[in-house]
Image (cartoon, rainbow, N blue to C red; front, top):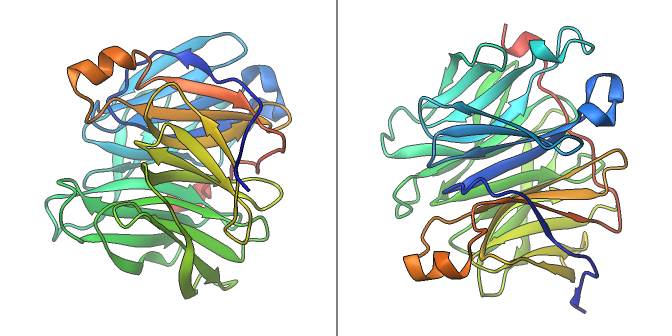
Length: 310
């Protein structure tokens, strides 16, 4: 049975992102929580953002194109966070971003045959494989694809999506979750040790209002789904049963990540994309970065191997 979570939502940064996405938590050097930070993107604003909860420090970088996600590369020296690099999903493919210099270096072209496509939402698994989707930027045609990228190169794993969203995995790494946003369906796939997918099935068919967007999995294997246009985040059991919902003061919730010292703080991105002037006036915090406390911890953020980007 659905129940409301007994916790309050706080706006940490009224960043006014047009299409905030890709929230993730990166612990500080050598696990020092005081240095931990939330990273996220504003796709339509062509921005990458960093927020440090312990100090309130904020930093932003311009992106050359729409950036659907940013995911961390294993540092050469974990005690030197200034050496931090990221793989960023830009409109035309994967690029390496140097946090110290703000420079982008192309790594892998994606969907060059689909000029209206862009990348949207990504996830790194425990083996260091990158899972991400492409989509029609006009949100009309099923030209989107679910991809896997690792040392073997780029591989198309599933297709025929208009808007791809939320790759995430179960704690044991045996189940991949991926969303077809316009169909309001989140699928589950079986994942082999080599990263092959099979057994595609409906995990959740979300009921309106709203559309399933980004997601994250907690330590109990429950799947948390941000709902665009739904004013909430839903938490589902591993069997797809709706357990709880967390209400928000704005409609478009796009992505969440577990962070903090105990991975019990949820950080969530939102968007003002698609809102009328009247709706924006009624939702002044739309596009902000939010947080609330979770009753259970999440899973740690994985890194991409440095050799992938060398």
